Image 1 (tube, helix red, strand yellow):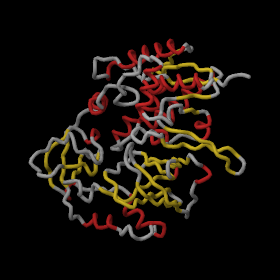
Image 2 (cartoon, helix red, strand yellow):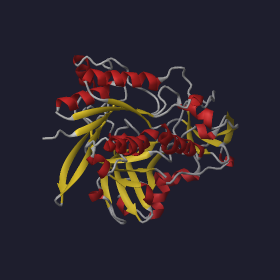
Image 3 (spheres, helix red, strand yellow):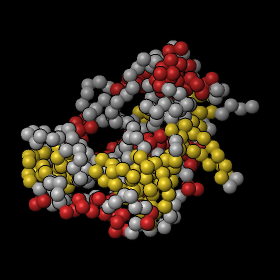
Image 4 (cartoon, helix red, strand yellow):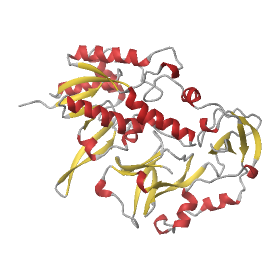
Length: 402
């Protein structure tokens, strides 16, 4: 009987190394493939060259495991689909998540297609998440489940995957704890056993995001304005969340879910910044404004007028919101069988960033899109981020925040 063939995305890290090792043990025919995603030397800050080191480590792991190995250059596709998107989003004053896009557009699309040219049945990665299969009305439906290690669960980063993509995906280490992964790597004598986890963006490695942005988005002086806490507009944010969000009318939903737009005359000028597009809602570091007593937080940015609006202290009403809105064309259901129709609502748990604890939320579907109303106010909801909703440990769907 022919063994199923799987192409493993070998990143040069311990997680993907162990993923390949476990698949061999499980009887798969395994091919290792390294994705070269970025090599524009004009926008690297560090003199280290992470992709070369990672590529070498990936090759040494494949050699040790006795599997075929090849590198694939996806840098052009990365630039088109991820890097350009990221700069455009920041320039528009939104907060993108390149790692989520990287999984949807690169690892489980372009990379998957490259694997299928090698007659692969599956692609595998070192993500800490799990996959299950159930039958709905006699048809197979794939579930994206949280990783067993609560400190490493990466299901949020895969919240944009489709049923088709999940059907071809394997996550061999999702049932393990990180220390166990390192232990397996050590026992298998893999060069990556002690290697530190990579930090930084999914495509440029050891580069600080502000430094990277400054090489593409030019500095531009503008005002930092402090917004007082007692503006009338903040009253509408206090819609009593004791009432059932499912019964609210659209005005009530919009009041708590849509971003607030401030005007310069609503606050006082504190200092100057180097470009509103370098900042994101909820940010505290980098403002370089002293003497305010409590810390200052970014509560809104206006990239057109190049203004940053700030609030004093983490309890400032401009920093916390009970709801968010996802436009119709930005809603993605992993579980298409659970998709809400206009007029329907459902209770889920949701998060707006990686590692954030899941919070109870009511999803309310209207003709124009989806409202996500949280039981507790969420700090720093920013346009462009992804919200993902779960039922227990299963990611049901996600969307880009308006």
